[in-house]
Image 1 (tube, rainbow, N blue to C red):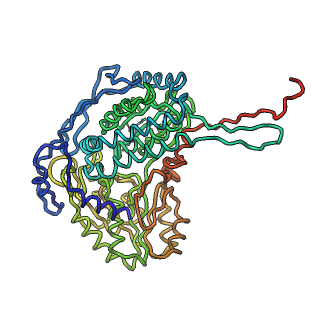
Image 2: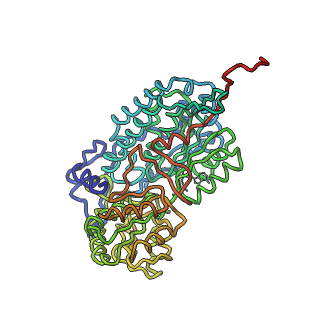
Image 3: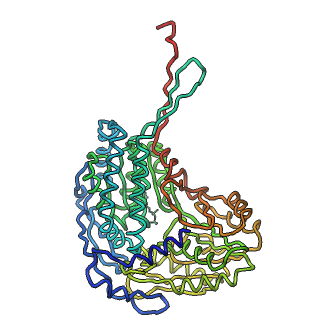
Amino acid sequence: MAARRLSLLLSRTASSNPFLRGNNSRLTRGAFSYSTSAAIEEPLTPSVKVDYTQLLINGKFVDSASGKTFPTLDPRTGNVIAHVAEGDSEDVDRAVAAARKAFDEGPWPKMTAYERSRILLRFADLLEKHNDEVATLETWDNGKPYEQAAKIEIPMVVRFFRYYAGWADKIHGLTVPADGEHHVQILHEPFGVAGQIIPWNFPLLMFAWKVAPALACGNTIVLKTAEQTPLSALYVAKLFLEAGLPPGVLNIISGFGPTAGAALSSHMDVDKLAFTGSTETGKIVLQLAAKSNLKPVTLELGGKSPFIVCEDADVEKAAELAHFALFFNQGQCCCAGSRTFVHERIYDQFLEKAKALAVNRVVGDPFKAGIQQGPQIDTEQFEKILRYIRLGVDSGATLETGGERFGSTGYYVQPTVFSNVQDDMLIAKEEIFGPVQSILKFKDLGDVVRRANTTRYGLAAGVFTQNIDTANTLTRALRAGTVWVNCFDVFDAAIPFGGYKMSGQGREKGIYGLNSYLQVKAVVTPLKNPAWI
Ligand code: ADP
């Protein structure tokens, strides 16, 4: 079970981060649960240097054309970590031109697939070697627990690149019998220049979901990172160069959505676009793609995923998994199980356990060992979450625990649990993207299926039951791109991911992730030369 595996991992990995200054073992004793309303202690100082802050264009780190920079902030304090080059449309033009040249003139798509695969594998080896530095940057920029970044996420990124490196030389087309008079070959070819826009909640993992399949298929890339988290992608870009990736194959633009992101989405020379972010921004990106050159777009958007705890469930285990499904990564997951439906017969018992888990959740400096929850990403999200909590209270839901800021600096929010949540409350309808669990009561399977599906989203769902018939009924009835049964957030590279309804279009990961980066070409030749030749 993912929750159990994760907690085991976290408990086994007393922090050994070599990139922190200070006596870590002494400081780890400062980890505390939020119920002790002590202020957050002095944050640990990462000693990793931020060496890469420029844009990566055509194999070189360069300033933005305007010379402008923007600050990237530490969510623990709101302090500036570094000033990063701010890309805009002129930089996007330069990056697209470099990617175009690397595609049209080579060497990337002209290399053998085996050579491309070797470069991806070399990159994965280098990333594995630099795991802890990258994880440190990721935690610093994003606020996620270091142990999560170092033991789970960066290793997953490595695995992603190895998985798609394995595909690179196994992508081939078909021959079809057709009319018996023609030899018909179906070729699978790279699109060309892929534009990719990623979010801040899993910066390097989202980078991997996009970059690995695109490169394996032979595309070249211009990727825009989220303005909140530009650092890890720039660091690994250097590793790509070291691995032998030719100039122009991967270009990285740091910058803002309405400027750099919009320029990439509407660029006439970008052949394919992939976006992960909010549904609202997804609509904008799709429009920009349509209004420019009709480039195909893959979208991975928001969610309001149900987590259904059935009557037969072991209540303690169900509460643990539901807690993990919502609170993991500070609740900042598009697939978070943010509507916890619990059968009425076990509802009260479940609520007690859910509340106890939230009260005991260990919140604090994400660099400290044993910390389960760090700060939210930025002041905007922090305030949005507190606003939703107030809305929950005002609409009549029962605030069981939490509900306020945690500590007095940075963007920490207390783990929060609401009971008596009704389907029409905004906290049950909209994506909060924070550590706020909404618990709803249901009577029978028909009732819960109807209510779980009454949402504009359809990204994921969780089912907790010991009854195979119940599991089969629910997995078929739920309208979502992923249904986890007795587990949650299992993200192997081979498992496709994507949304029904307004949670997205297309799939990433696994074999399905390749389709997004391949054109299909039919080549038709007569079996016998026609008489007129
Ligand atoms: P959030 O609200 O969680 O920050 P967004 O969907 O706004 O999520 O952001 C996800 C990514 O989309 C980020 O890289 C962001 O810069 C980018 N983005 C935001 N607005 C636009 C836009 N108008 N055009 C293209 N990209 C955008």
